Image 1 (spheres, helix red, strand yellow):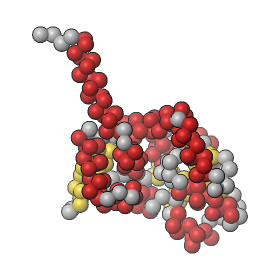
Image 2 (cartoon, one colour):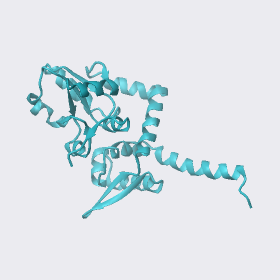
Image 3 (cartoon, rainbow, N blue to C red):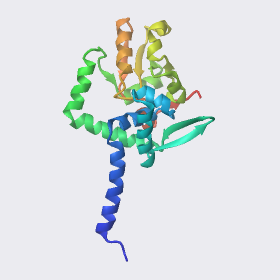
Image 4 (spheres, rainbow, N blue to C red):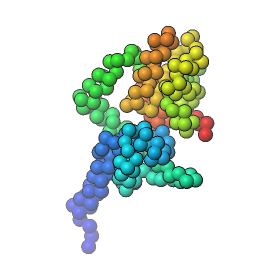
Length: 223
């Protein structure tokens, strides 16, 4: 019997709802945001997200069942990774939707940023022009292994936890634009505040490496 339009729609919407349900959890959203930086072991994901390994494994299994996350093996280690860039793109769209229309999200971000003095953020388009002109220092303050997996073209790596000790490696004559994982990664807030307190001309790039890469802008890796 030929499938009716109603049955077809019911089937498709039920399956799409499973994908939406897999995304609809704060811990799994954070995991997707993290995995956009590259593959990680469950232990590393648990450490970065503040969850137990058991809970992290459960969330990863849900994402895997929804085909949003896949696994790969390197030696004795199992790594989790996004199944495609469209997974991150979907999460980024959902994040943007919430930040635009959910007043509580905006308030939470604004309240957190009150303790920092970062000034105006640099847009991706403005940063691209500065990188092409060579008149800016692009500073990646993510953990070093994430930098090696992929970073903005010509960016240098000084993880936030090393910035105070290595700050003299940076020039006060050039503008510095710092970035981290994305708009919900607050490493950059601390980095720019520290730089400005030390007399550096610093601004932040609110979007992260993955957002930059999805625009097709130049990237590099050192792995």
